[in-house]
Image (tube, rainbow, N blue to C red; front, side):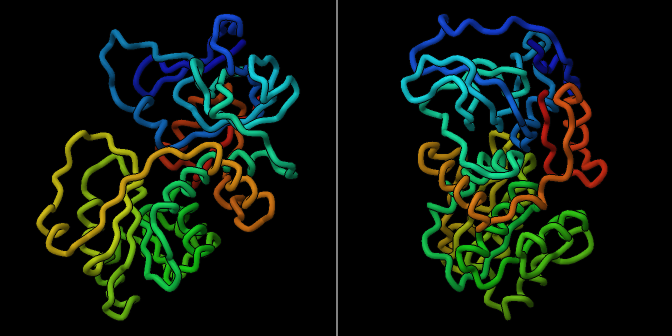
Length: 321
């Protein structure tokens, strides 16, 4: 079978490997033939960051974790051959013709005419998990920093949950145009507008009740978020960190009684099915974020497009024959 493998920084090769023998893995393991997978921002550190030379090549199929497919072999009492599932890859990453998962992080697909949209249940499930931590959002002034795929899903979710203001920011206009489709009430391009002044004006001086940081991979924006919050407000950190230690404005955070929440990953059995239902019942439209489909054998191109925002790429889905 074919699988992608990162062999050097910024370099993925498609290689031939043996299909795993399910007998070698624990009870509860399932083998899945991939239908679609997708590039996530949290996949980028494996692709971009230069690891010690002895670590290369990285594991087969890494680091893609958003994947759906059909069960082809099973050591699980919950899943049978032929079941269509969304699953978090184990042992082999999702950039592969077949991958392995465990029943604890596998859920059956619901019926829907677009499987690429159902694939978005994986990232949307992590947004659901984060929003569980926030409490009642009715009538709140909210800001989402970053309008990549995850930021766009947060934008739609905040609107669904009744926020009064959903102000979104990014550095590129094409993302902000999609943000409007995802129900942003206001958009600000931080490359040419003062975000602090914009939030102050839009909220009539109140400032934000909630700011969600969905950029990650640098340390500057977390302190920008603090400038946008009113006293006693909430900051949710969702963007993936590349740095272990941040230069954090602790005094401002402390003196303004800010609530700081970190969020990563989902509660799989609860959050993925809810996300699927929201998509299949068309309570949230994820289609605007899916901008490109590529054969998975063009994973190198897909990662480069996602990294450099080529061709106005937002969410890139890989297709498998």
